[in-house]
Image 1 (cartoon, rainbow, N blue to C red):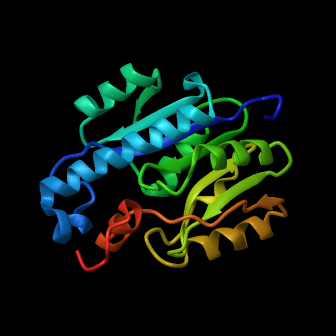
Image 2 (cartoon, rainbow, N blue to C red):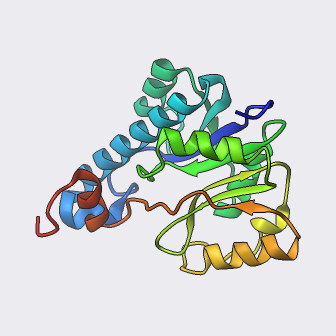
Length: 204
């Protein structure tokens, strides 16, 4: 671990039917998709708190900031809850990273492939690199760590497209920053992703 342990931020929607993980609904239904989202959030928070002290973990909430899931996680793990601000994904990511002093990291709450060991590796690498990132198989990324504020990494990015990672890497290069990419990960967006995580046959 670096001398200064980074703070880890997680972004999570409340698991409301019809508003969370809706692309899983063809397989699970709207209620089932919301329950799947809740399971993913629990899994990711548990991994975060296994890798870092709970005092270094903040869960940024959306849709319903007082949802029982968020209260459950705060009581079970001792994480801090904060409400996500308005704005696009880049604005919310940058706000979270800058909300705590020192190096900071952020991950989505739907990336079960980001293990506690991988979080610890990223924290270690952030001591030697300005940026640490876990590219995702879909052309985005599921985790980013920064030593300080780099606005260009989060402004004018084509969020939700396959160009997110490539565009961000171009910005990193243009800024002359040293970046580490310890592993490629995948997140759970589609029915086949859920089946992959659960080890279910794709025909289900």
